[in-house]
Image (tube, rainbow, N blue to C red; front, side):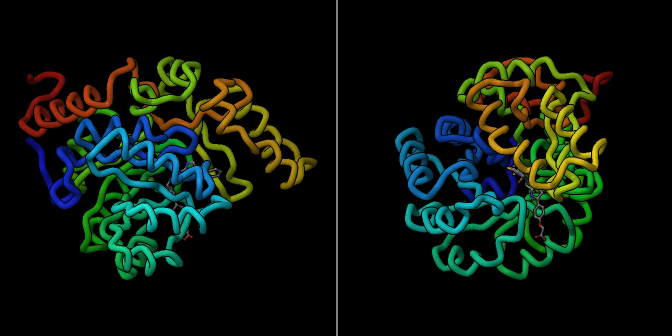
Length: 316
Ligand code: TUI
């Protein structure tokens, strides 16, 4: 049984976090993952303070296990949701898409374990100094907002640069990748794309089908021009957006921003996978069937243990 400082200190059965995916990671998914022994995480990205409070209450009704909240720092509601996690007694907060420095003191005073997502060594060191409990080193294989480095390059560099636990994210969907993360010095992993097709995940079936049908080269990064690169599955939306972004200097930044408004919700909640933005990582093609969160976690850890004991495709 694989166990590390991160499952031990957070009271988990397995050192696995579920990514706080915007418009995806609600109370149902987070409670499903937490009940299966991982750390379920509610995404605050699409909520104002009161909506987040409701989602936290729902999650508390669905599980007695620990769960976390992810705060997307570019959200217009970041300040109010940053207070709600304190008021609701949340014990683990992850952050993404920015520097959570201005909230750290308040969260630490409330006893919250803060685990920021970092795309670089410089930010990792800054977060350690500010009192982060651990870090999530996320490579650009991931879905959603991406940094420049790959998981393979980023994780060992951050592990060497800090003295707090590092969780690997980006490109991790099976037991081989989980085992590889441990070999890079990570004490756990964060998984997003594979949980998109969890039975407990409430996104539109069309979104799940898009992930299930994806091939290896079907994800693309758009949004670099405005400084917010985002990985999603290639579709009518990404083609139109990329054309506006690169092919035509006639499209203003404001118009580009307008094109991207509401597209995450459109795909995840309305199931419009043509005009919406279907966030998913490079491992989408490895996700081939719907399973419960428990099946996903136990399968991944079973495979990882076999790999760490020397099993390969050729040696069972
Ligand atoms: O945050 C994510 N993934 C996301 S957020 C999201 S919603 C959205 N994002 C952008 C535009 C529109 C909507 C969808 N997916 N992952 C964690 C992550 N954080 N990846 C990279 C970073 C990151 C990047 C820069 C973290 C910190 C950072 O700091 C820059 C600075 O301020 O120093």
